[in-house]
Length: 387
Image (cartoon, rainbow, N blue to C red; front, side, top):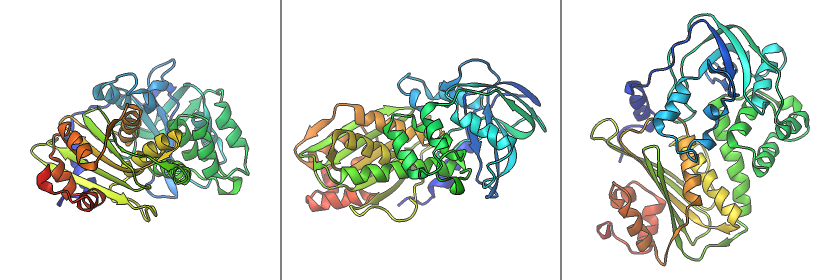
């Protein structure tokens, strides 16, 4: 079993990775992609503010993770975008949606395009933020003064904002069904732009990402449970950004397991983390963090679109060069895996044998660290020595 916790391990990776953030003075004239970031420390009085870039023009790509993999961006190119983003901060009570600063954050979160902005910081921004929960960003500092231009709002987000009787969960599901990018939905939710008027709050960015993934996935699962189960084993695969993914779909009612291996990233280490749910679903927060929910949403999104049901076991390998920069990595890679034509197999043994050909770690290691995967092997009288 893995001796180190996942959070501790990922922090050790980000602490030593040579990823310099952009140098910025106390004054910044530029644009917001648009993007806001709401912190979680000291909740309910948190550090909130805009994400800014010292550049003019259309810079939406810098905070639109859905576009990065289709464009073939490298991890280094994405890191360059993210380290150019400067976070402005001011203390904000999450329950207080009035006032000029709260209005400015909503203006940004609902915008359909980049907004010209100007910030004066209390000191020169410094530092950086890396992790697997939210997208990375560069230096940050407190705001002394901030101005942002008025903008045209995305029409469907605007309708949700003005519908103060619509539940936030229903708004998330409706926007996703309408094809609004996940990143836009999440930012509007985080900025307190949806839900019944009396219940609206700023939501810390890290929490809002998992809340959006979970809410959408739970609704999709209700639909998927009504669908016909697939009639054969399928394997969908995709790899990018120093990761390799394999989604094994089984001809069973819904069940789900996420197993991830971090291999030789900082040295000779091999760490494996996993979590699962049976058909009844999962209670409590996943021990592997937000990636569990991002992957689940991506798989259910594809099954719902196909109007089919299946059990899913998802294997992930992160290889040397990988840097934690947000759960977008999981969500968008698994989405792309599900869009690839599947390999079809008559039995579970053949499906696992195929997966083994494209993974560095022996499948037997994944089995030993798993719950559903190992149970599925036992049910079919498969042995570790078979792999």
